[in-house]
Length: 135
Length: 135
Image 1 (tube, rainbow over the protein chains, first blue to last red):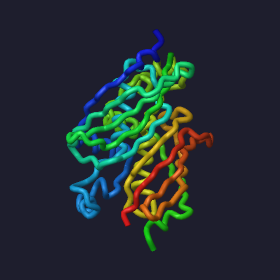
Image 2 (cartoon, rainbow over the protein chains, first blue to last red; image 1 turned 90 degrees about the horizontal axis):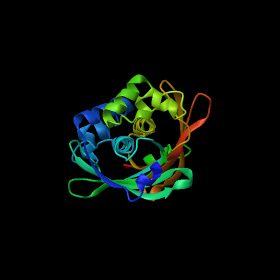
Image 3 (cartoon, one colour; image 1 turned 90 degrees about the vertical axis):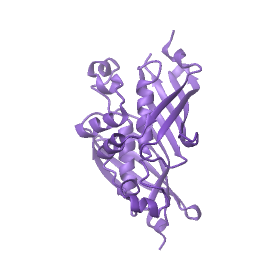
Image 4 (cartoon, each protein chain N blue to C red; image 1 turned 180 degrees about the horizontal axis):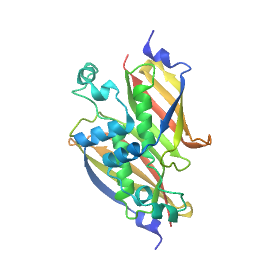
């Protein structure tokens, strides 16, 4: 069986928590110290309950999902997009729902749609990811 | 002057290096240990000269650029997309070219186009970012 056939009807829910470690390692990686993410007073002035987490932590979770949670490790990211719908905060528990939308066997490409849901089952972010399969 | 006016004709080049620290902190943040990024032998079998860096390190750089390098810090990511064009390796020096594509004053939105260039001036990734401005 071709590896790409593993993605037919593929759907998975993957749980994440935005831990202090997640926040701090992202900050060290990115060097992004924008006050929305680092200054509680600033974030509250903008109408949030506290420092808003970096949106791109969710893209780091996408990296994990694609790299570690698919039926084969023989994959490589080609394109990604994300729409941020609601702010995410420290210690939030999220579930990523990832499912195959399209399979293009001739070019070894799979396109997924995904959404991140918070504990209130609200969509906090959604988008698409396209990967190539090493057959 | 409205803050959004600061983005008229905005264009900036921002330099990044994918340091060992960048790679390791991203790995700690994401927990992505896919062998393409961690096993040199595996990466070479797939035709690369060594471990391929996580594509989402570039999205962490976008986080920095939007959070720290714009004419105002009163911004928030709304949407992002990225197309990966060439692999990126440890110690690669990249330049991000970021420029305003559209301004929607009525909804306080700016859309940028961007590209990451390597030392050979080849585009390694490109995309769009939409932000909201806190006026």
